[in-house]
Image 1 (cartoon, rainbow, N blue to C red):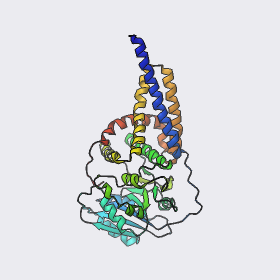
Image 2 (cartoon, one colour; image 1 turned 90 degrees about the vertical axis):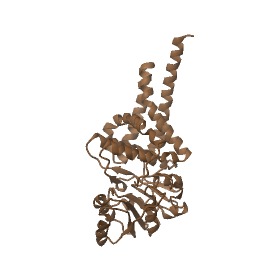
Image 3 (tube, rainbow, N blue to C red; image 1 turned 90 degrees about the horizontal axis):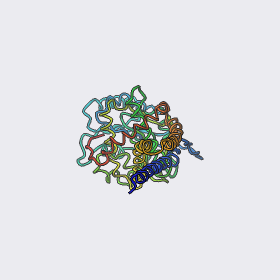
Image 4 (cartoon, helix red, strand yellow; image 1 turned 135 degrees about the horizontal axis):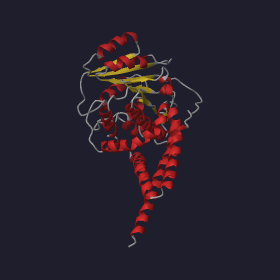
Length: 377
């Protein structure tokens, strides 16, 4: 047996595999992600303002409500709307704070829940109660730790609705601040947003984020609320949208005035717990969504190890040429997408953050099969 020929054969296989993985990455960039990068809002023949119920669930969130709730309550919107705050068994000053705000804001409605729902983990129970108590057909959801990026958030989100629309997916961003952790969190948020927004634009919606999400009350009732998801600790946003959204009934809102903003976690440990909880619901996605997301994550994870292997085992010039094709392509997509999602300051670091994503997938892969803790949020 000629050992040198055998070794050369495997060198070529590694290089061809690297090329194949790169082609997969290019496919996702130009079939999916370009839809966000080059997004243009669809022209509507007529624009209508609908009555809207904004729903926020809160549990021991007095500090966040003081900072963020006024931004929800002072939205510029001429048509009938209400803000429903579900106070779920809070032990802090939430009840008294809401009662004081009620004196000033007459459209604020307070739903006080003083019991737990056995066997229904997470915030599905309080959210269900908020939806039940809401008066209007269009529901707009956000969290107590979020604030609208502008006074036109409500207007922009509801404007997605036409005769066919039942679901509107928005982008939930994080505040910008100095430090590496802030960049890691915001880049991961951008990267996730790039995926779920572009998939929806391609007619394959698979999730939304509860920080900025809207759907019709009739959709919630028609699907019997969260009854099919009660065994899952989370999923009140992504799994529900995974179940009810489709190419016909879902619209995407990409407008900086329609974003929401949240404070990111302050330590890597806190953030890793949050992300592990979020990813634990992925196993319940539809098969097509799991395949597409898994193929992309797998190609991302393999790209850099194969690139390094090709440099040492094959022709480094060819390896670098393939690498540059993907680098330039991704740079174009990211530059325009970051501008759309108001994350343009990250572009100077995107190449380093792109390498970080290899380690990100390595760290959080275990969350896909680890049983999540049944925490409220």
